Amino acid sequence: MHDATAVPGAYDRSVRTRRIAFGYRPLAKHFVDGDIVMSHVMAILSATFPKGEQFFIDSVRNYRQDIGDNELRQQVAGFIGQETMHGREHDRLNLLLHDLGYPTKFVDRATGIVLGVIHRRAPKAVQLAFTAAAEHFTSVLAEQLLADDPFEEQEVPEELRALFRWHALEECEHKSVAYDVYREQVGSEVIRLLVMDVTTAALVTVAAASIASCVLTDRSARHPLRFAASLFNLRNSPFARKTILLRIAEYHRPGFHPDDRDTEELVARWRTELFGEEGSLRDRLVRSADSA
Image 1 (cartoon, rainbow, N blue to C red):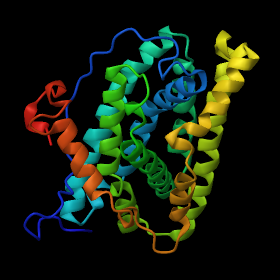
Image 2: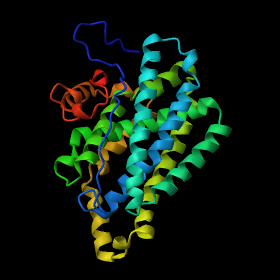
Image 3: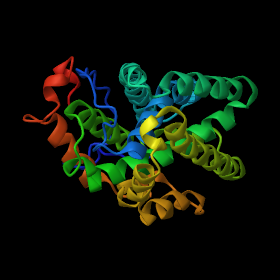
């Protein structure tokens, strides 16, 4: 564990729950810059979050009372609070996306069924390893979103822009929590790496399902030229960078730890931009005491 309080002015590694509420408004069908595929990818991704976040919470809670490190116990409390808020806000967004014709309710149910089976059948160590692996994926994507900030150049509704920036910031803040709980309570490298391989396959399947949902549920995607152009445009997405694959692959490196990737300056900057005294999301905080 890293002690942020040992040195005056050291980086703040606390994981704080920000109770926040967004005011969603009606959306255009293809709400990400008018792009068919990217809109579906973001919709399907959002649809997996509520059940996914709850699974992450439960897998960490399984070991909460056994954690010996006080700082880690405090970070776990913040992790649970942050993930709870993420699930709640994406649940609200998913209802809006469902009304636009996106299969968010179906994806939510399917995610719940799959994760429910894992919760009932898999050992707790495997559940926690799955959470640690999934958190690596989300933190890598979150860092890319904050560093590349595609929303600066894309036409995206302001509330969705705010939602995904807030979510990305908090994924970076708690990126090592589940991993540290796993390392303290389980520690098996064999389980960690095998579960990462399974998690990778599952997420590739989700990505393929996102594109399939375009064709199955969106008439616009059945126009060959428009759909082909949208697929081709994926190469410009910040999430299609080769560096993302390389950073995800780092999970297999012996001795890997999420904090090997230094995101302190990035996190500090976005904490200020979003929740500082003049932060763009400060007015959305339900309780100002929970601000950064």
